[in-house]
Length: 491
Image (cartoon, rainbow, N blue to C red; front, side, top):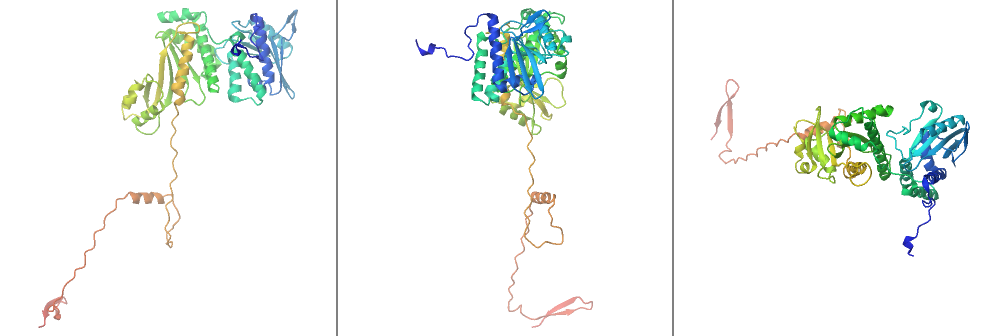
């Protein structure tokens, strides 16, 4: 048998998984064991939950008594440092299994009785807003115990970021973390990708296309939540590639009240047939805005960039064109002027490259900003694959960032340069002050800018030949008034 068909031994094998229970048990044990072994990875997951920076202890299937029932949470986390101790119960779901509200409430009761700090859930469910739990539970049970959620996509993204970009100090621990990444990326692990827009997708899409969708329809909020979950998933995937934290861009109001965000998306679908969101990419010129037009079947990605503050309008347009040398010709550019509202002047990049003046409506008006946008076909299928809504959104964001956003740099003004002091001649100082002044350079510059006046040539001396006759003595007589009188010569 050829060696190419041999299977390499793995620390966490995917073979031998029989059923959902075995899949769930193996994923829980693998994750918790790596969290306690690789200190950096365990810390990056538990620090946001309030755990201290001490050694992390992990356990699986710890039995607890709740009334007459004996319950077995999937896992337990404990971190100690000094006098501080933090403990959390863990509930895990894999595949398409969803969290159960009754089971979570029972674990919250156990945590309260045992004086634990939190309950952590892990599943393939991605909440629409960070910090929001996908399962609704009785809020009265959250007074003393916190409820947190990790999606398997988030866990995998943090593992890749830690190993490939942030780094692990110990090489053996880095290898262990790599084995966990290999396991979670395998289809049989149960850590699924975002691959479904939900059962209400087809109904909502058809209602939007026909213009019959109403704000009170029950299917619309579910699609809005799935769209926000898709943006969070795409942000995690893009962050894995970039090695940095990419997050959805939400306003303070939307973070404080997630229901307002859902209502805004539903209203947008009813009025214009669009779903819109944005993601924040570290050090990018601005948020990357994504607009999915369900009626036109087009997804548009765009970013706004401020124009330079100096130079003519043509100079500012050329500044943008130099940064878009790798962008597709179908990229749309829009220019906005100062103190103006509404749409600006828009043209395709292929035309602006030949005639930059196409973006300049009035040369006297100062350009304020540019908008760079790129459209692509929008899929309509509910799941994954060719022609799917999920893949078209993910591909559009990845392409737009790679072709446009990563090459854009914000304009910065040139810093002023110091004026060089003029060289002083070596001569005896006069009575006036010879100390340097800030006005000395200005005077010299003014003199240097004054045009030079050519001096008139002095008349050449006139040589007079004196003849022998001219050498005769001359006598001058004065008149009565004292002025020179008659001139006489003697023979």
